Amino acid sequence: PMEKIPEGFDLYFYEGHWYPSIFFYGIISFQQHFKAQDADLILATFPKSGTTWLKALTFTIANRNNYSFSESPLLTRNPHDLILFLEDEIYGKNPILKLEGLPSPRVLATHMPHSALPTSIKDSDCRVVYLCRNPLDVFISFRHFAVTVSNTHFDPSLIEESFEMFCRGVSIYGPFWDHVLEYWKESQERPDKVLFLKYEDMKEDPISHCKMLAKFMGLPFSVEEESQGVIEEVLKLCNFGKLKDLEVNKNEKNRNGHPYCMFFRKGGVGDWANYLTSSMLERMNKLVEEKFVGSDLNFKFS
Ligand code: A3P
Image (cartoon, rainbow, N blue to C red; front, top):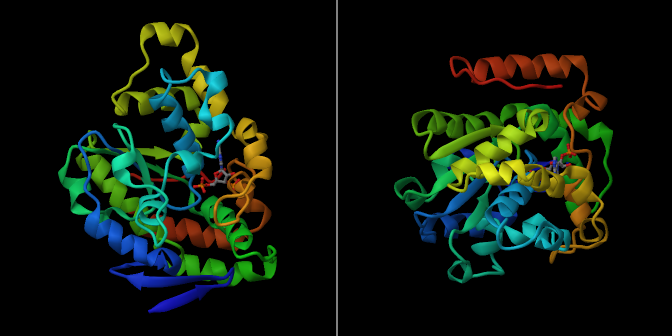
């Protein structure tokens, strides 16, 4: 079955999840053809959970000895141009890069749910970083993103219907809960394989998360690097305000003609409160409680 969300995206239901129909060809090709390498790092996110930030951070950590911070490719290129989406840009209808062309270790990204990943990701020694964010900020962030992509204007009167659909699980790569829970369970069972991060915690304590990320990537910061302030440099380069103000992210467009500025909106926690009612919050709290019962997983909404 298909559904159209009010902001103008067609979603296609396939094996338990709602996929954007525009990526469907890439989703199937990715599932069928991707061969993970042991050294790969896969960044997995539900859309609008902070993928752009995670891409910037992992790119900078992985390349910190290849470029000085003042010459980082991040200063002139958007993070999505440096780390590509597997199901869209690599296996999609018009892939822009062949995987064989990438230097090892490869850092790649996906929005696919864990259960839908190609088996080679699960069977090889490659590692997965999952970043999640509270569902209300994800929900609001996506509304803004979607209107940019579909070339319309943000219409608050559509929120109620969209929210209804989101709660039913009908959202891009939804249901949200299944997406988060699948990676959560995997991270609990195989902590060496899947690192589970939360956007809100990263905002609160970026330094320890940056260290954790580097360690998980097999590239821990040395004592010397720490004393030289390298972690702070990484964070400064990947900071929301810093990236948002760069010429490339302010004024340039991607190959589909969409402005890169659509990836940098507010970059905070709790913006949903400017759009959603207290009864919507109540409903979400109940849903989160019901869906994540017994998992030890919770979200910070502010
Ligand atoms: P808001 O719309 O709430 O501002 P994704 O990268 O997964 O598409 O998610 C986009 C969200 O992450 C947007 O949230 C965006 O502003 C925020 N974001 C982008 N870059 C960021 C950064 N460097 N640090 C923190 N948040 C960032």
